[in-house]
Image (cartoon, rainbow, N blue to C red; front, side, top):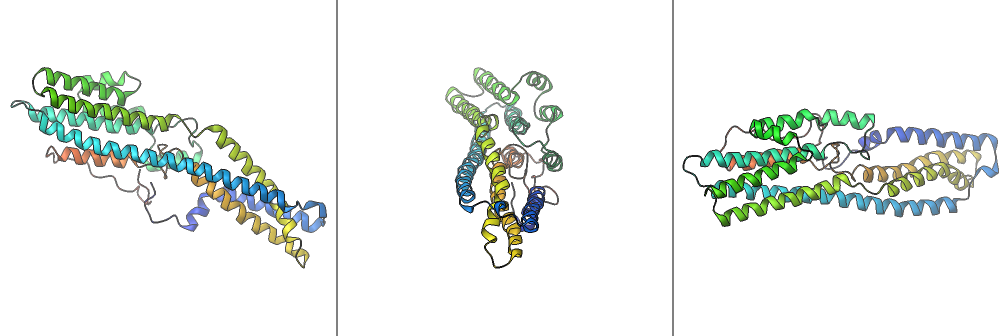
Length: 333
């Protein structure tokens, strides 16, 4: 998540620099050819180009609205995880009663929940086939520390749960789901031992169900992309618009007083296309809110914040530090 007030104009240009260079070269070539040859047929009437631009603007508006809905839904899901996690920690602290092992059992339940938080983060950050996997995106993941491996899952389990439990969870496909399963089974054992009474066990079990619900909602966003037919059609329309735009601009600017006015079609084409392209990029980089890039929901930051919060409820003092912006950036991950 980018946390500064706004992206600078220079950063926006840098973000779109490759496409901007291609569009500038293409528009310059088309306008130069029109100027030096003097071909009248080279100009395309502006009306069909403008009509395509209007249609593209509507399409981009729909696509960006859908992308924002996915991003905001992801943030609401993690807001729910924050609230439910605090409730679970309070219940673990107040509902577990054992003179001999009370603090140990409370710590076990809370630490297992922390393991679930971090494991869910790892699973959501695995790169899906439809997410950005180019050289720049891969480099950003390395720089932000959001590229995940099997070693990350093992490290989480080694830090927060018992060794045999960690080995068991590693044999499963959906490890975060099975951590909740282990948590539920453990709470039933405590209920049968009389350490948690029946009604309080029901309240804690309801939160396990809530965690499953929230995890499922996050997985729904992660595993089902914005439909590829929409994204593909949008890419084709933008390409067609790019190809036709300089010819339409030549038609507009060739009506000027001098032949040199045709050259004004070049910067006009570049600026017009850049606006459309920037809107498209903003939507495309917002539609996958767990892919580990700068516009993500900062789930690692949130998971660490929850961990600190709920472990402090148990009066623990040896806590990890909060996660701030990536060094040299305004990006929270």
